[in-house]
Image (cartoon, rainbow, N blue to C red; front, side):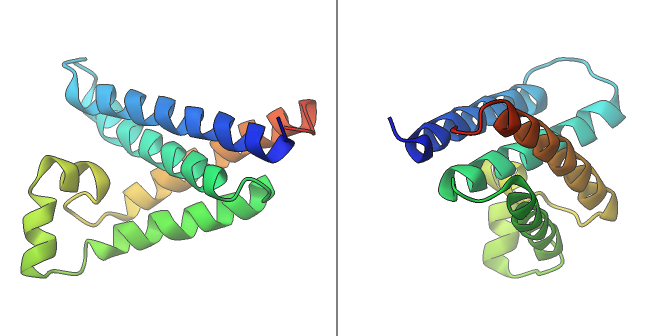
Length: 133
């Protein structure tokens, strides 16, 4: 298996893991404190986005992936300021709530960026241990 293929498969697995954790976090009755529920879910969303971008661009360095992910996450958050009937109708669906969210918040961007920084550090540390992956 080539290093690029190995990286793509491993980052897709991490995308699925973070996505599943996020869905459980948001949908299962875990009885988490509100702050942990709200921002933990946002952080898992950002981590899943990082790993998805890493799977799409497996040869990019973690800091490059972090920048792309931070920009994409902020763009999704700022899209909440755009109101059209189609966007607003989608945001009311479960998929819309999970993928786009409903209300703009700078705190969400801070949570995303913190999660991206943590995920980037983990990715960098993993690549340092196994440079061929």
